[in-house]
Image (spheres, one colour):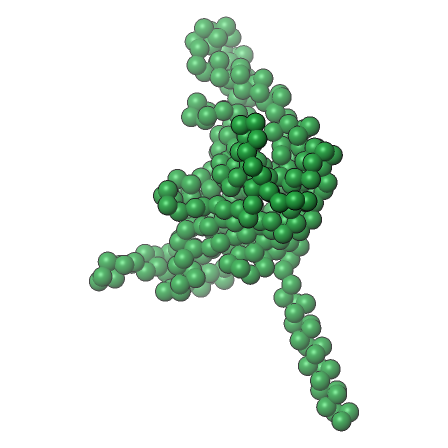
Length: 284
């Protein structure tokens, strides 16, 4: 009997240790500089005039133009950008840029569990968290803090490898709106319905960057079958090359961000996230 009990508790201990060892990591962010849209807006106007109106351009001597051009470059100014809120103005093309450009109208790159109804011309649905704009935000649409609500991204087959998650937490279009609405304290990240990581967000008015274990595989070769279908060779994180017909790999990756806890807003219970976007390897 004693031996049986000892064996039972040994198995129980090993099972508990195994579960503990497989817990997903809790990740802390790198904090970027605080948002300063007022200064940027003034500089944006100057840059826009400088590059579109030769009368303004001729008002500056060569040295002044060089200094202004340098500042505009730091801002990420480009005549191809729609406005100062568009975060792909700079050199950091994100995986959303790849996916939004390459997904057709019938495929949803992003979906959300709920969304606040439109108000005063503002939309708070899934499109606001995947539009690469700081001027809009996803706001969950349930009563209370939105615990358990989520946003989900569907990456297509053979997507670029993802190594970084960047989050603009809260409704950041101005600091008053940011304070009035709730912000996320913790997000649970699930990849293909399996818990992947817990993100600890800070309550700061600045972009937060999380370095994560790589999601996706490097494609080293693409071949064609007689029936016209394709097959791929991949390289894993250990450098091993493998040929895959794995349906999970071939169907892409789904990444879900679920709200676990929040920082309470001064005025509203609504929890907002302005943008979640990605960076990594193989970005075209």
